[in-house]
Structure formats: C-alpha cells, structure tokens
Length: 38
Length: 502
Image (cartoon, rainbow over all chains, first blue to last red; front, side, top):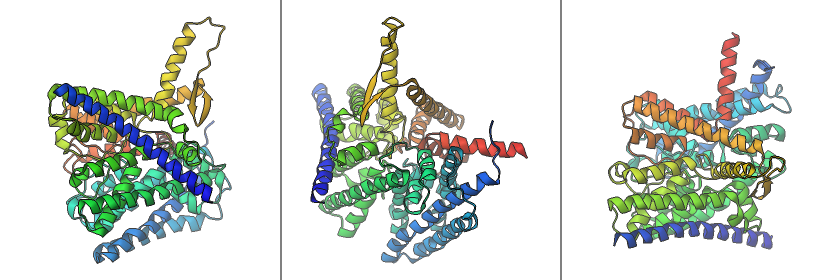
C-alpha cells in the first residue's frame, strides 16, 4: 500500500515536471523574443 | 447487407440512454447542495425539479426495457447510444440553465451545455460575474464529466455488461484499454481524475488565498478552475476568464494542469504505475513538444514583427499562454477576445489556429486531430518516401512508441487520415457557415477552429447575438468532433434509414 502511494506520487511529480519543462520551453522562446526586440 | 433498425435495435438503445439520463439527474444533487449551502433557494429548487425530471425520464425506459435488454449490444447500437445520450443529455442539462434566467433562450442554454460537455468552453451565458454558485458548480461539473466521458461515468456505476460497455466507451472517442474490460477502464479513468481533483483543488486553493480571496471563494474558484483545466474545458467563474486573477502564479499553475489534462489516459496509467520514462519516449508527447515549440516560435516571430508586447514576461503571459491553451484545447484566456483581432496579426493567428486544430492527445479530455494521429501521418509519409527509395521487393517496416513499440500498419494510417480529413471538412464547413452569416474570414475561421477543436478560445464571434443557425452549426460541430464523428454519423445514418423505410 505504502509502495503504491509512493509510485503514484512519483508518477504525479514526473508528469508535473514534464509539463513544467514544456512551460519552460515557452519561457525560453519568450526570452529569445525579448532579446530580438531589444 | 444492412439491418433495418427495428424494435430489437431501439430497446437496448433506450435502456442504456435511460441510464445516462438518470446519472445526469442524480449529478444535479451536487449543485443543489452548493445552492442550499449559500442560501440560493430559488436555484436549489430549480435543480431539485430538473434533477427529478431527468431521473424520472431516465428511469422510465430503464424499468420498461430491463427485461428485454440483450446481454451484448452491437457496434451500431453502442455508437447510437453514445451519440443519442450526448444529444438528449444536452436537452436535460440545459433546463437548470434556462430556468435560472441567465440565458436569453433555450438554444443558448443548449449551446453552453454542449460547449461544457464537449470541453469546448465557448459561453453564451448572461451576467457571468453574478451567477449563483449552484449554476457555476453545474457549469464546471458538466465540463469535468464531459471530459472523462458521461457515458463512461454511467457505465462506471450502472453497467453490468462489459461487452456492451466497450462499444459505448469507443463511441465516446476513447479506444485505449487500461484494464481487461471497459467498466474497469472507466473506473480507472475516474480514479486518476479524482486523485488530480484533490491535488489540483488544494494547489489552486492555496494560490487563491495568496491572491487575497476569502477561504471559501478560493476553494470554489480553485475547484472550478481545476475542473476546467484538467478537462481542457476553458470555463471560468468570471467573465474575464483567467485574466480576472491578474496573477502569473495562477496562470503557471493552470498551464501545468491543463498540459497534464491533455495527456492520454493510457500514458497516465503507465506513468502512475512507475513507467516514468514513457513521458519522454511516447510518440504523442514528442509530437506535442515539437508542434508546440514550432508554433510558439511562429507566433513569437509574428509578435516580433508587430512589437505589441515589449518583454519576455508579456510574450510569455499573453502569447505563449493563449497558444498552449489553444494547443491543449483548453481555451483559458489571459487577454480579451477582441485582442486576438486587434493585436495578434496574421502570422500569430495562423499559428494559434493550427495549434487549435492539432489539439492534445488521443483518449484524453482534449479535442483536435490529436498528436497521435499527427505522428502516425508523419511516420506514414516517411515510410512511403523510404519505400520509394528501395527495390520494390524490400518491405520497409516503420515503428512508433505509444506505451509499447507498435509497427505502423496501413489500416492505422488510413484511420488517422480519415479522422483528420473529417476534422478538416467540419472546420471548413463551419468557417463557411460563419462567412455566410456575414463574418469576415479571419473571425469565422478562428471561431470554427475553436468549436471544431473543442478549444473555447474566442475572437468575439460566439456571443448571444450571433445568428441562431450558426449556434446550431457550432453545437453540431462540437458534438461531432468530441465523439470523433463515427458515433454521430452512425446515429444520423440510423435515423435516415428509419425515415426512409417508412
């Protein structure tokens, strides 16, 4: 039971990190846009 | 040889549709309780009456046809049940909206219900900022239930025949088996969604408290925004949508949850069972990463040309946010609708329209062509190119990774092409309908992509003032696209054949 909870928690964390990485790509492209605009 | 739809066909259809209507009636207890809690007695009485009506109307066919129902139903029956239940369900779910006085007509109420159930997010409600909490609860619940699949919900609790359940499950646009049978798969989908509902509501509640909302308002807004984000729905309790919160933190949290919400349930299943590498190996997440990056670059180049937004933060919150919201088919907005028309320019509008049409993952809450089909079509194209460059006697095998390595077969590629073609034809037809109603191409095209992709971003065309014919066409587009065409086409073909036989 304890192991199952840990596996699910780590899975949720992994999905959040992956989604965060996609958001990070958006932030990097926005930064590149700002560099160009300057 | 095709079989005419006789009594033996309609009896199981009526029985299972009755089950879904009962479920939709029982669900109205939740907004009724919210209304009671906030002393909204008139709204509570509306939910009591409309919920009771749905339960009675659903129980009648279930009780009458219980003895006659077959142990298993065919594919056509399953598809017709699903499409029919979504349509009749819309008629019943719109009753509380209409009686609340927040809609100018029953058609507007039906539009909002179909928009919610299909997780689109276009809204025709009046005075959204002063809606009763019970009505807001119902709006967001419809999105949440529609996202996981309302037939799936009914099956989870009521169906006993798992063979019949699978056909209705497929009819609802989901075709992945996470468990040996459809009922267990449906339960698993709900378990994943409820785990995230608890987590998401808690995170949004904390963010709401930080923004200065009272504890109960932060909780309700948190739960509603999560339901919308997870279901890639796009509804929000305030008319300014996500812009109302004026918070980068709130926007980032919504992005995280709606990106996760757009993932395939089979991917959730694999990752939550410990196969975390699937996130970076799966063809759908790879496809989404590539298309999202390319389209964000394109939209950003568009804004470099018109220089509307001066810095990275503005580009991130105003351009990337709408783009990823459109790509995941969520429809949350952190700008006003008219800004698309006034500020975005042709290049950025093109990028976001393509993003809306591509959409999220298959077997998820998202709409659009789906990343899996984009990847299959791309791989199929590469396979044909490679086949042309080798001797005819040599057969080229192409594989893609989706939960496991799969050999790309012609039948799979053909199915993907057919569904994408159906989306494009529906999008073109809906755009044409908008132009025939007198709207310019850019407005008609954007709103058509939003309705067909079940997105919900609006350029300002979808208002109560738009022609009734266009509202009906948008309802049909949202309904067909959400069920990925086959179920609605089966229903229409059956009804046409029945009329023809008379």
